[in-house]
Image (cartoon, rainbow, N blue to C red; front, side, top):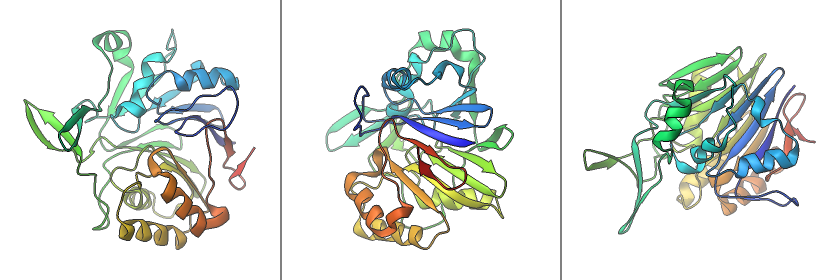
Length: 281
């Protein structure tokens, strides 16, 4: 059975659980358990304990990209004596900045040297993609398939004191194969959620994307881009679309209005079963 539970998201509506600006999902696929992103603090761990999830049993941790709100919490993960590997894009360790007006913020990975000394041998850097377990893929190298989805102009990297636009080459997707169907998980879709979907289609010809779970980074985009995104999903074969985290309240409402039952609006603690029709449990 393939299912997932939301450990961290921007919204919570259940007692005894916490929310923060970030994303973390606990994904179960038959005998494998994957922690996809870890939010920015230990909130994912506290929620897992409250939900009775054996977080320490993760077979792998997959980090979608090198921003604090997806990677920061990993320092709280109880690695112990486990052999849990941490899969991350090869450009994720660059200095990452948000530049808005005169304000410059470091939004990159906040880990210190002590963390690398403790678990450095578990870190696996991925450039374009890898099948980490049978039917479980980490897919990077997201290409561009349209002319209207661009990485936000506020993101920069810095090398030797020189700033340049961050094209988010470290961004990666988690793709779960179920016979002829695919479930796709995206942390922020900085390169464009349609580009992400088209990239999966290109890499898995003949497979149908059944479920898309994604932060979509649509807050504040132009009306033209939002309309094009909604039209794409309306005309797609994707049966269930679950927008999370950075998608934005207004874009989520527009997606729900257009897609109706095909769009599920979820929050921290929700568990979704993907096999045999995506549904809440």
